[in-house]
Length: 493
Ligand code: NAP
Image 1 (cartoon, rainbow, N blue to C red):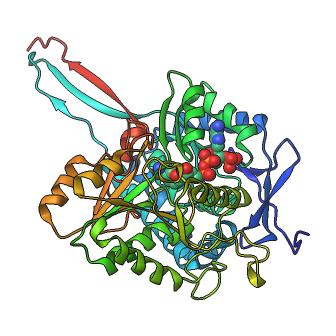
Image 2 (cartoon, helix red, strand yellow):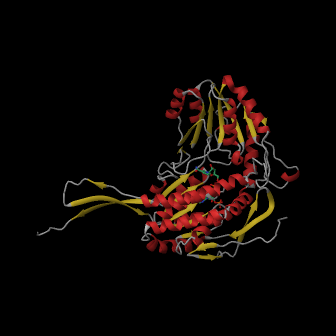
Image 3 (cartoon, rainbow, N blue to C red):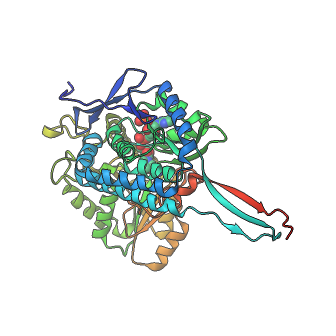
């Protein structure tokens, strides 16, 4: 039975007003560490709510695009201050909804504050170019303009840092936004919108509509007034979206990964095991850049696996709100089912489960979506556990005979988001950098983590081959270029 203590109901934000859905229905956001606990209640929106939000964003665009960039930036700075003032509360809320540890949630909220400030500043650097003109009476230049209404659709795994890295560059460049967060994590998404609203965004510039993609996804992405869709989520949903959007709608899809960590024979094996754990098990393996495959040279394979198991044994699984916990629950029931089914599949495919991979049900684990971190060895590159995104705390160890073979194995999947290598050999590092098919490349670093001022995105099925997120490059997605030929009239001097 659900725990029903003073559950607060939150509203949508449409045209500057907090409003209920026309459906008159709500849904519950629950705690994955204690699935009987309802964290908060949200509007179960339907198409009509989305249409109102798009209409508001369309109207607001007419004036927002004309607001001076420094004033737009000032609102982002104010929102950053408001968010920063509530870091502890928001981090606890994030953990209650998503399950990650409090330390990870705190880092994520702080990172989101920094992201708002970063784009507030970057917004003042949007520029075009001047071009040499054959005709001295004509001045040729380009200027960048906002697109209009942008639909922002985000996943639950980084429920504030992913929305903010889309919304901040969209707003600072003069676009307006309709934001649909994931069903599992609407509260922390609400906190971001609340900070932007209270920071002074005019009515309609940001609109927040919660609810299921099955009801509001299609009307949002197919509306003719929506000029761009920026989406982060699963490759399957990304494919559906790319098939549904209009030809004239700009689309950015940031999707799944199957990220490899290559361990060469000269690697510091203790460090390599720590990097595998950080990339593979931190965030309960629910990071798009999470380490899913470790490709290890034959001659150090056994020593590496021993170190990996030893360090994994020491990890504490539990509620993200508890002190000392390193691995929280999976974010929802379907994640749990999915991860357990891949563990079963790995065994059926002939891989050897050398550690973990069990549903935890005793004591405090009873009502949460807990799985012990799993290590498979004897994994062959053709197995499904070595090719498909699992999105949970499961590491597949694959043997390789040399660096070239390791890179070939790493590349032999549909994804290409993040890849790392552990070695001190500069020549083979260069070979890896040159040949790996991946948008993010790390040397002696975990596959996870990216700098907010650096571009981020993948290749192959991990991203649309168009625009990058994060850093200055992110602004490009939200801007279109106009080329101006500015001639003088004849002067009768
Ligand atoms: P998801 O099921 O694809 O959902 C992501 C978001 O899209 C949610 O808001 C979801 O709404 C919505 N959605 C789903 N299907 C849709 C459709 N057909 N049309 C419009 N919206 C739709 O993904 P998830 O389970 O939340 O997140 C995990 C996935 O995200 C993993 O595959 C991971 O690799 C990927 N990810 C990628 C990156 C990156 O930068 N490349 C970063 C983080 C995560 P509902 O909640 O209502 O279903």
